[in-house]
Image (cartoon, rainbow, N blue to C red; front, side):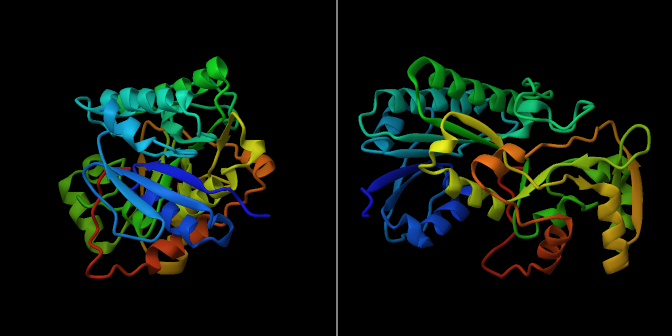
Length: 331
């Protein structure tokens, strides 16, 4: 049975998730009826068959309306990190313009949002049980976490107010290439937080860099912290499974590893397989376990990356000269 042609708008298309998703969708025989329109602002994408790039800013209604013309599906990835001067324009105003265009569209079939565990506090708050999708929003301090709460709430309300066929896949920290290795760096090249060099001081950080030492994050009681991650390949798999899936209708689902990374187990694995020395570091952070059973049930999705595979993929990655390590956002 032939599929009707679909036009998918991807915002934030030049980011790690956007690029990986577009490449996978365009190469998948199941989605040959999809064309992709990428809304790009500061960065762009190289030409590909069935890919159209439009330039514009999320906060400009005319740009969003132009990008939304004849669109059947939206994948909203555009975000702004800890940048107070622009976060509300991008995350709230931009989301509002997208939702308004979706609400009045004669062609739109589905709106998919990638949310973040910043909306439920990441590892900032103690949890006595696994975190399910029913846990209340609880942003940690900062404008980025607040923006992730507001995005999810806006989508939920448009689903209630107007019956929008929306879906939110809430992801924790997204890893690709050698990201997982660099989140353990004692240098200024650390990816995301904590910034280990600031926790131990300059002299110790220099010594740890020279020995290749690995930080083992502990909570205030000295127990290894459990922290949630997802590999970009697993997230993209879940997104493809959610497209046009009736079981994704108006659902919020956690998309993450089956088990969070235990920093104690991570340190032991790296010491055993690579002989790296370990540096236990007490922090104010708390272990959190995101429950992914809903996505496993409704999407029949299974993450392929566990701790060992995440480590091996990051440590074996060899960066080509034309692919410098550029971190557009810290996490």
